[in-house]
Image (cartoon, helix red, strand yellow):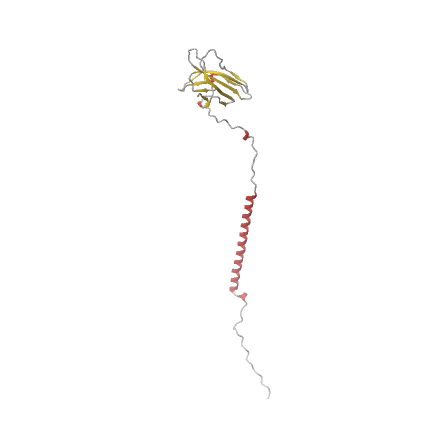
Length: 209
C-alpha cells in the first residue's frame, strides 16, 4: 500500500501584527524634539553666564588697573598773588591801598599846629607811589579830606610856617611823602582821588583811632 502524505498544521504567528520600529512612533519624535530644545536652552544659558562673567571681570580689572594721573605741576597763574581783599572804606592807619596804578597810604595822624584863627589841627602824613611802568600820575592836597564825627568832610586847613604837601606829577615808579593839616577832631581821612572818582565806593577811607 502506498505511503499516504502526512499533513501538519502550521503553528500560527504569535503577537498579531508585526510591531513598527520605535523611530516610526510619533511620540518618539515629540520626545526627541523636547530633548533637543532643552539641551539647546541649557547650552545658551551657560554661554550667556560665561560672557557676562567675563565682561564683568574685564570691567573690574579695567577700573582697578587704570592709573589716575595727578598733575603736580603748579601753573604760572597759581603763583600770581590774589587781588587785595582789604575793605577800602575801613582801613587802619599805616595801610597802603592800590587803585588804578597808584598806591596811597596814610602813614600817621598826630596833633598839629593851630591855624591863623587859633583852631586846633591834626597833622596827617600821606604817601603816594606810582606803580605804572609808562604813565605818570598826579598828586595834590585837594585829593584828600578830613571827616568829623558828624560826617562833615573838609579840605585842608590853612596853616602857616609848616611844610605841606604840594601838587605835582609822579613819574613811573616815583613816590612822594608829605603832610596835610585838617581842623580837629577828625575820625576819618578820605582819599577822594581825581574828578572821575565820583561814587562813594571809589573813595579810600582810613579810620582814625
